[in-house]
Length: 249
Image 1: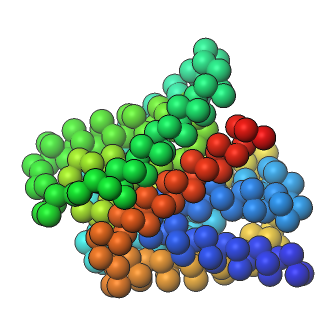
Image 2 (image 1 turned 30 degrees about the horizontal axis):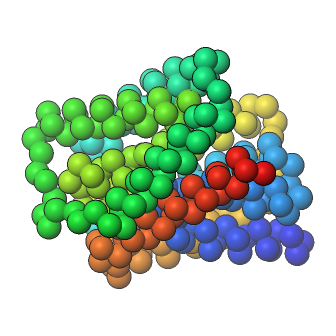
């Protein structure tokens, strides 16, 4: 029982911070659960469902505050879903370590952009056609690279949207909405193979929901765009550090 309570607290803390960044907490919940003794496949299935739950809860707040750009989000979801299997297939032809080193380099670059790049004072306004084009382009890159590297596409989507002129808060809100679908798809894949820990899922879900509410409230009501940008940059650095640790270990 103590392990389950600790897991719930860990989920609450990470979900709160990463909901603000819009990338979902599965990438860090999985190793945390594994460290607590949860079998890896159970940890993956549980973390992916928690990702879907937390991002769905957060998206309710983000939608109410007009922080989700649906015109861009929907093409990203469609194109990313189509190209993710192609990225996964491409792993046969490239060394995984090489890909991961490149990904670490990208994360450091993207994190530096978030921390030091001065975003436009006003969000760039786009026509409907431009929104679709932006979404398809970002979705294609995020879907292919996400499948290639086996990581969440949100790591690519948030910095790409900010670089393209989105307000950082809208970039996070839009990406959170997108992450719902990729997380639930991954969860269903693991569930089909029987990898689910019901007690862990039930208690951790409480921490996930509470963290999603708090993170979404902070993003929508309390934080300025510049602060959100800083949080995203730090989160990307942390992801890069964690991956680098794995490569060096």
